[in-house]
Image 1 (cartoon, one colour):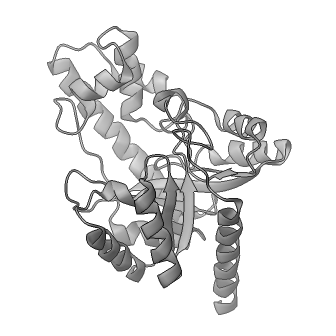
Image 2: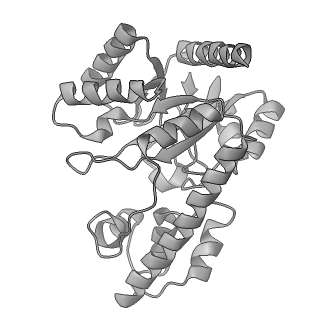
Length: 292
């Protein structure tokens, strides 16, 4: 069993990178990927823990994409097998982190205008080494008794369309794919069903358009993905030679209904998915080296 999408406390997860690896080992997972949002700062600890504990660890990242989608849909891109030392990747992610901090300041101002007591100092302390996200704000609101749950914090204040919501700076489709490829990684579309197109044909057309920009593949296994949608993605992968990935999108206590490896309980990402992804990555790496 493998799990190629999960998050640590370096973004909006609750567990440290080392804790993720320890849990994976206890669960018998063969390979896992750390795909924190817009940051790779947790990867050194993650990879070190993998070597120490004998779990195959894949360096990754999850990038939010600036694109227009219907029905409040969203697009995220996973970079798998990236080089954490790639200079352009680090510089771009550092920029996105700075923009996250500016966004957080705006959220705090909106909350203060609503007579909700919260400061930037509290938020920085909550996030620690991690990249600031709305879950950190939600945790503070819960701790202060402003809301009774993390979900309520989003429902009342932080979700899109709510009074303290602020959009964040994102990369365009082509720029995000290029950044991942330049960092030596595979560009994988995360949870395609959450783009929220009305029809499968629209989803298919969008994926094929992204292929022209360099997209390597997509997640066909995901915690909340309907089985019928997954089967259509697998058929599309066979038809156009897309890479296939999958993961639980584990966030620890911040999404306590999602469990590592099994998602909502019925997720199973075959081991062969990792083998095929690694083989594709190695082939691309060899082709790039030969072209130099």
